[in-house]
Structures are given as structure tokens and as C-alpha cells.
Length: 243
Ligand SMILES: [Fe+2]
Image 1 (tube, rainbow, N blue to C red):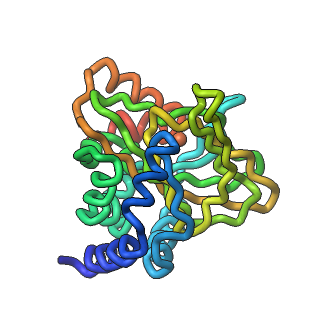
Image 2 (spheres, rainbow, N blue to C red):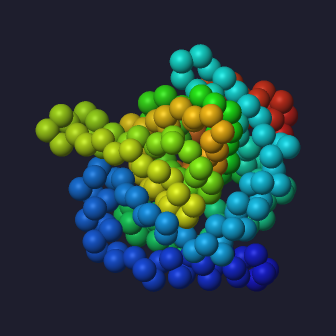
């Protein structure tokens, strides 16, 4: 095992040892497949992830969709070439086993051709934000998001609306995604947004996406690629760098 993979395994194992599996599973189910673990991943690992995110700043692709989104991102294609710790975390067998236990499903990473499989998001200019949305699955199965805070020097908040379609149980949380904080959710169930960045602020997060069935119809693959090209990574990246 490489030094990077060993460091990731050790950090994930240490983080998992602090988790009460039964209590976490109860919270996950009660909140419609959502849970937040504050400052969960060890600082030693977060520092390595932040160093990779910093090195990749020249590769940031910025996009702007009026009234919905403004911000920068780096796709899985670039991470695969230049961010070994991030990719090792994404593929960590210990993390995958934990997520499969929590969700009660046999999860797997997205196919190599998905630029969103794991990706970095940079909020660096005043007003950077994303409006309310689901992380809808275009796959045949469900898609689960692991959102990890890396840099949090901002007044932006990840606003999460749990049980959006059930007024009796609806609940809204405004979370700071501090370094090491992990938010786990079913992309089809959690209605969420990131509020606008203030002057002189910065927020960087990493998302890891896992699916129960990696198959996708060609029509949905096309829609998914168009969305990724326009809203996130640019046409050149999405349509010429396929694995
Ligand atoms: Fe999202």
C-alpha cells in the first residue's frame, strides 16, 4: 500500500472509531437520510487534502448561472491526475464500508467517466453561492453525497432542508462546513443551498459521490454531461476528457 493510501486508511479508521454506529444510523433514518459529523476527519488528513486543493487553484473552472450559481470547481478528471490523497479518500475501502453500513445499501464509486464522481468546489469571490437544489441521481440507482469541509473562512452557510415535502417534520439547518466536517445525504432527498460569500471570505469543499447502481441510460448521460459542462467544469473538460 502506498504512503498516501496508508495515511488515508489510518485517518479514516481513527475517525470511525469515534462513531457510535447505532446512534448515527438512528439519526440518519430520522432525518430522511441525512447526517452531519462536525470536525470528524483528523486534522492530519484534512491538511493534506487542503494542500492538494491549494495546488489545484490554477485548474479552477468558474461558472455563473444567473440567479442560481456562481463559483469555481475542479473535476474528477483533474483530481485523478493531480490529487492522490483526495482520490485515495474517495476510493477508501474503510470509508465505503462505513457508508454502505450507514445507508444499508451496497454503495460503489461512480464510473470513471463521471466528472462529478469526486470534485472540489471553490467559493472565492464575493457573492459566490449555489441556490436550493437536490443532488439528483441520473443513475439507475440512488446517489449519496459526502460533502467535506476543507476551508471555512466565510459567513456562507450550507442550508439544509430536511423532510422538505413533509411540513409536519420539515426542519432547516444552516451549517458551517468547518475543516474536517462531513455532511452525508441522499441526493434525491436533501434540499440544500450555499448562501452567498461575503467580501474577503473563502470557502472550499470536497464532495464524494457514491451510487447503488452505476448504470445510466445514454439520454440521462447526455443530460448529466450538459449540466456538468454548463454549471461546473466547462465543455472542453466534460466532452474531451472522458475516461
Ligand atoms: Fe448539492
